[in-house]
Length: 309
Image 1 (tube, rainbow, N blue to C red):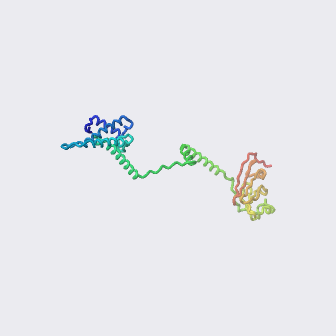
Image 2: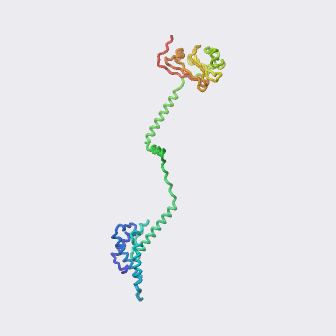
Image 3: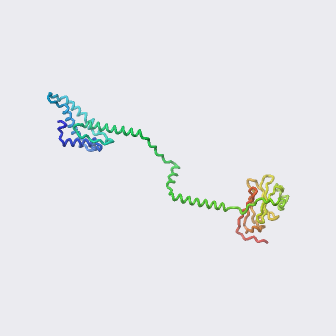
């Protein structure tokens, strides 16, 4: 039987089975009946092709067919392992190739080799294109550990929440700055150069000796109502600060420079002697020496007004 002797129905059937076996949508390995039918038709086509090759030429004696018969048998034994076995069916090529239109001129073995060659060429072209293209940089990994959790938490905070917090923080800062600006001393008493230290009558010579002061060390400051304030640096480099109303001593003393000279005038320390400012009981006047300036801070008490007796 020759390949040309296959009926048109068998040729169409063989072509359809070859497309299912070697085409881009190969699915014949799932149909064992179709695999068996493909082997049968390819055997018939192969034997027909061999018979065509050994057919005698007109006018020549016919050649013996025994040797071709043996060669055909050997080919039949090797063909299933090489071409027709379903496990050796090549995968679908990258670029789909149409199945051979003429099953007589393209044996099944050649179709299998062509499919393998096409797949190899496609793989080589893909590898060449990959070598020519720059590798994309790997995506940076997210930070891990504590900082990663902080970053995740920060991304989950709604933006309007951040805006509200910023507004509140700004308002708090503004209020704090306003309060700090409002916290100012009642007065700052500079040095009064119009008066001399000899005018101080509430610091007798014995007090000057006690506090290690000389008359020329005394500095007179501006008045705060009836309050008279003097300061100085003694022989031990301590800061000294005193206050009086006229010749009546109210409070005072000396302290190391790193502590500063600070004292309070209260109900127990001469507050009732003052008529200006006229403060209620439980009020406090704090004097703080800062260089050549005395700051005066006043706390208004809640007691009754001082009544002069």
